Amino acid sequence: MLLIEEESTFIRDYKMQLRKDSMDRIAGWVQLHGADAEQSVTVSIPEAGVETTLKTDARGFGAFEVDAGLTLWSPCNPKLYRVRLASETDSLDDEIGFRCVQVRGTDILLNGEPIWLRGICMHEEAPVREGRAYTPEDAEILLGWAKELNCNFVRLAHYPHNEHMTRMADRMGLLVWSEIPLYWMIDWENPAVQKNAAQQLTEIIARDKNKASVILWSVANETENSAGRTDILINMVNLTRRLDPTRLVTAALLVQHTDGEVDINDPLGEYLDVLGCNEYFGWYGSWDPELFKTVWKTPYNKPLIMSETGAGALQGFHGDADTRWTEEFQADVYRKQFPMLDRIPFLRGVTPWILRDFRSPRRSLPRIQDFYNRKGIISERGERKQAFYVLQQYYEDKQLRKEKTK
Image 1 (cartoon, rainbow, N blue to C red):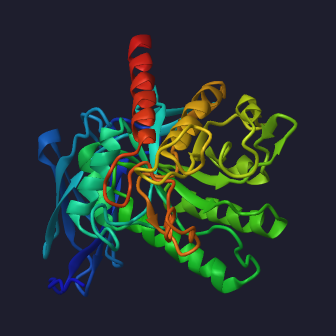
Image 2: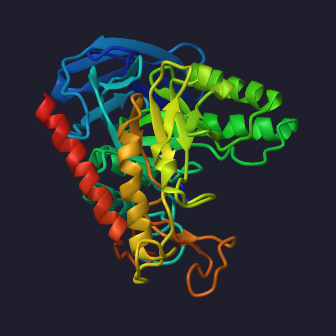
Image 3: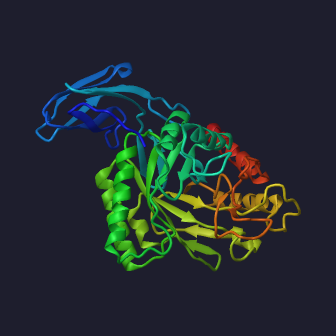
């Protein structure tokens, strides 16, 4: 809990990002709160030579647009600009990066260039102690592990993580998939559920709208297809675009494997910018190695992120690659995944499940799980499993191949 002292009329909120599809024009607004609502407000980015003044209306609202010659934010160069907003009664400073994210056919574009998202899923669990990750130091360690893995992308599953995570991602140069907790058996007919989901989505967009790292808003994870569910999620997609047209919208979809094929044909896919899909070949269900020859297709001309994949292992438990729960088994599942992923022509990223083992009351297998989900590639004590290094090498090879094609 923070107690903040403000002026009688203060800057309550603001937005400052590149206009949709632009790389050199900043658009934004300022919202004042208090009795003296009509004021002049100066917006300045000294390093970029930007200074403009706007006039707020009787509601305290004022919008602006300005051209700017910017060094665009990217994972390779996470450039942040010092921004200052000064009204007649208040002022504040922030650090903001500017970048453009788009979709063109099956490509995801960052600043006009195709990007392949080398990612990992993360829970908001402290890296080297019990409990939630809630400090800047927690965020720096967790995201530092992702950087060590050669990631340029993280999926913050399955709920809004604390703001330290997105601020640190801005500074460290990691792109972010941000998500609200609409998953599994949702009561889609309950108006209170719909209202709660819309509120969570509105609040996370309001908080992180100025974060360069956040490129994807996710409206759902693993929801069973039904008419009621799809109608509600379409409404959520539309709400997302009204609140923030500058970012992309996605969801992690369920799919069925039939006769050696997976068809990503969920009707929600028609309304998304980027398809997400969770699959656990080699872990849940059949262990048949033929699964990794699966052909993936979709009726939608859109990019796909494999939003979950992986297997479980107890760190320090060793055996052959056919023995479940060993580090060797987990690493082998990862190795078998990569050739299949590389054959999906519209795949533009992957976020395996998950960075670190995490507490889970559903995982009770004695001496193996002990109420931890063991799909982490790092243990709850911060020890890297074999799969960490297998994925790290895959991502390094991906990065090197991209650099050679430039």
